[in-house]
Image (tube, rainbow, N blue to C red; front, side):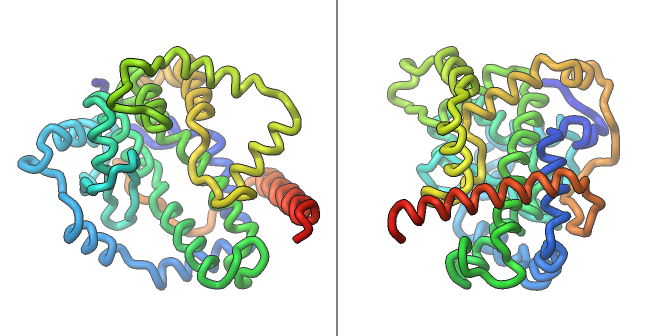
Length: 322
């Protein structure tokens, strides 16, 4: 496996991730959300819960997983080493959180469904979130959504500081952040098929029928999805991402993630990183939640998307007689 000594997250961060974060930070209320989050949210209770209810991975606990994890930490030049926990949960899922003490939780559903190379790809993906400093903003998004739900329906009755625009912007950024973490997985694995097969299995894989799943067919499915230019379908995709049929989606559709990752795998940028030509910086941890200077055009684009979504929701409400 390749090792990227001194690599900066900016070397592989997806531009859509960067743009969405800049737009988010430019929205009115972000500064207040950041201050309230720092004031009310602490990491210690989360770590206490994990210490009491999961298995902490180490040299004598899930030693195979721990070895893969340590190698991935080294390959992405992350210091200090985050904590890793295994949670008894059949859902094939994992997540990374924490600012002062970043940590990763991987469900037993992942361990039971994926092979060792695919598990390594998942670990590298979550480490990519830590490397890029995503974890603090992910926690802020979760807290903002929780606060909004406690105060009323987020679409129509939230408080002054947890606005619909901020909720939309947080989730728009969260989806784009996944693209950067996918790139981190590819850098560590140096094997596109393994990263894509892990995505396919998490999307709908089965241990019992794994021999009947075809990665090439899933790639073809991704290509067909991307080629669909039907205007109404595009509206439906936009609405589904933004909660018109339930909760807002925190991840892009797997077929879209395949598309973006396959594009990057054949790019000159990726080839240069593999050759050792990449932006360097000291080992990185969590991002500062302070204000950054955004690109006003990106913020304006996001506001327009939010307004468009609200119009579509209003149309649907009228159509159902609500």
